[in-house]
Image 1 (cartoon, one colour):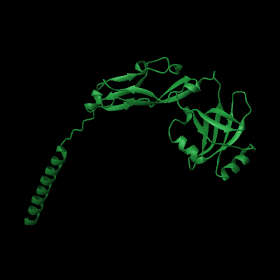
Image 2 (tube, rainbow, N blue to C red):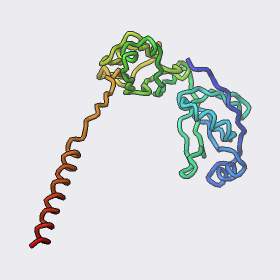
Image 3 (cartoon, rainbow, N blue to C red):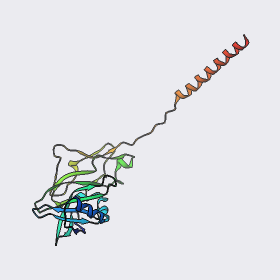
Image 4 (tube, rainbow, N blue to C red):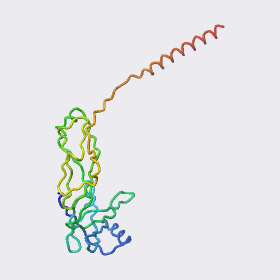
Length: 222
């Protein structure tokens, strides 16, 4: 289960586009906490704190605890709007959840045992088909990652989802096929081929030049 991350926030009173723009002019990112049959709370976040979290790559699959409005809220990010020019966050939606909540999340794939993988030691290439696996689980049980042990796999082998031990309380969203997660591809061999046509073109060019020279000499002597 992923650790709960504390995120500092300040409450804001007004809603609407004008209020959101004012929040951005003040150097903060407007956001909202909603869900779980409770009243939505308008908040703002420090953009530096937010950028640090979004750059990790697990922002939407991490649980956060935000203290705002006189209480602490355990939330999951569900949507984030980005500036079309700077690509920086300009608004975030956080959703509260309960013990019965089950969400669809993408959990990243990680690898161990690469040094003990015969296929990679022979020069094989790790071909990652799925960098993340979509699954349904409760927010409190979102895995940090799905770990795949590569030791024992040879060139040409594939790792399918059926061979991976998934955590408890986790359901795959794709259940109609045993999809591939990663393969050990054969190494690419570059073979240098001499350009024989180029040599032929050079010889033919020389012969043509000699014939032209003979023709010119005959024309001059006549």
